[in-house]
Length: 153
Image (tube, rainbow, N blue to C red; front, side, top):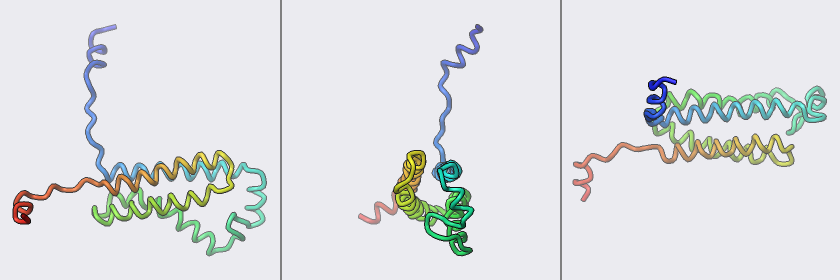
C-alpha cells in the first residue's frame, strides 16, 4: 500500500453547504419515489387488482373526474421538484410550507387501515414532507444592512 492513498484518507473532504432550493427539490423527488413504490407494492395486496378491474378505487367508482383529481394530486409534488428551483424565494418558501403540511395531512389520512408496508412508506413520506415544511420555514434570510438597523433605533 502506497503512502498516497493513506494521505488521501486522512485529508478531510470539502463539504460545502447545500442550497435550500436544492434540498427542497431533492426532498420532493424522494417523496415521489416513495409514493411510486408504495402504490406499486399496493398492487400486490389481495383484491386490489380485482377492484381496479371493476373500476373501483378506495374513494369510490372510477370516473374521469376522480382520475383527474388523482392526477392533479400527484402532479403537484412532481412540479415542486422543478418549481423549487424556479420560483422566486418568498412564494417558493410559502408553497413548500403549505404543500408540505398539506401532503403530510393527505398521507396521514391515506395510511388509515392500511397494510404495514404502506404505513412504513407513509411515515417516511410524512417525515419528508414535514422536513420540507421545516426547511422552507427556516429558509436563510439576508442580513439587514447596518444603516437600516441604525435608522430603526
